[in-house]
Length: 195
Image (cartoon, rainbow, N blue to C red; front, side):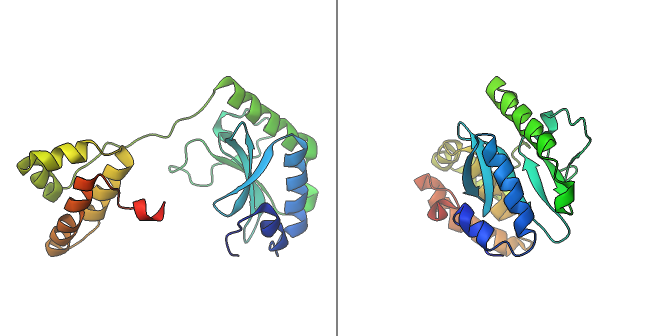
């Protein structure tokens, strides 16, 4: 399925679980959340903050709660789809329309909105920035480059470090370093052209 630009596009093109996803959409909209599309899927927001999204997959369809780990989950319906990777997000999965419990879903959405109103959030764990030795040597030998690098945001720094780090050969790492030095000096990020 191609990434939808609008929620209506998503539902028109939802071949598998189309009717069931439509039922979840109706439930989410009934709670007063605002429908938008992010990452090609419908996402429902409160005051611009992501509360719940929905999607269909090969063997199930469902909802994902962006701060689902904060929900009490009395029915024990929430699962962590990527154990060890996601901290806050939880999914509520279904394999048939008969499993959809409107009252239960509404109560989970209301609790998620209450958590958002209260400012309860699980913040992502940040890993320390590890600067590859080639880049660190260049920064140590050139104070203006080091100053430009220090002025970058953490995401831009991580992108540059990863770009060098993933290269296997020393020659490739050096070529990549030479490519990014002018970009760092200009204060640009690796992915600025895509934004």
